[in-house]
Length: 235
Ligand SMILES: Nc1nc2c(c(=O)[nH]1)N[C@H]1C(S)=C(S)[C@@H](COP(=O)(O)O)O[C@H]1N2
Ligand SMILES: [Mo]
Image (tube, rainbow, N blue to C red; front, side, top):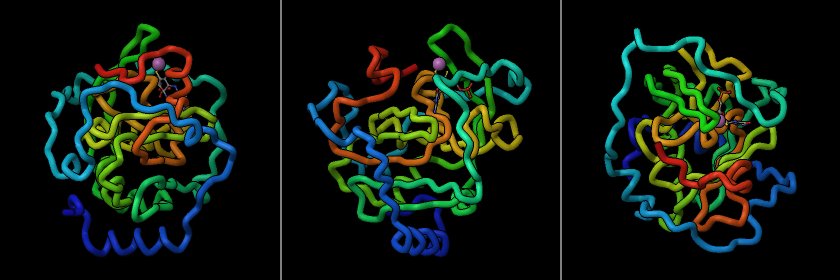
């Protein structure tokens, strides 16, 4: 597998760190229990081929189209308190190389930014510039088994969601730590949130602390999804 722009040094740094400090958060999260099978969705390619395959990019906006005040903070509960120095992103599940990354590790990975429209089902939208790392780079580091088809995202406020693996590996699916060229504000998900032009706002998990790569979805699919919101939520 080509490690997508990651230098060998970065890769060794991260893989060494992760095996030394693998953390499987046992906070009673139920999402891996009660597997009920598969959501019907068209994108069921193998994870390995998707990592190598370029996907169609969504056209982006220009700098002067950014709507710097239009992103409305939308949080189902409260903004969680996260100590940035103690923060870790755990990536585990059906992977050969589970990861446990600090923000410094993540900021050592190739940076990318994009100007896209965030669309909330509650009837508002905002053109925002996001900066961070491609989720596909992090998934590649974790070395998912070829059977992996979904990614779960757990957040520090108790929010959770799940994505199909093709959307997770889209080149414009980022784990963002900047908004409009500034450090990501805590209300918008700092230190790390999902940002992508291909899915609705409720799929863009803020305060992501754990990514679980799996072959099957459980009966828990997302905070809003489990209340009847559409699971795929493509734009
Ligand atoms: N952890 C977490 N992520 C979340 C939410 C939330 O309540 N908790 N709300 C979602 C919804 S519905 C939207 S529209 C966006 C809003 O992002 P913003 O608050 O940065 O504008 O975050 C999404 N991600
Ligand atoms: Mo939303």
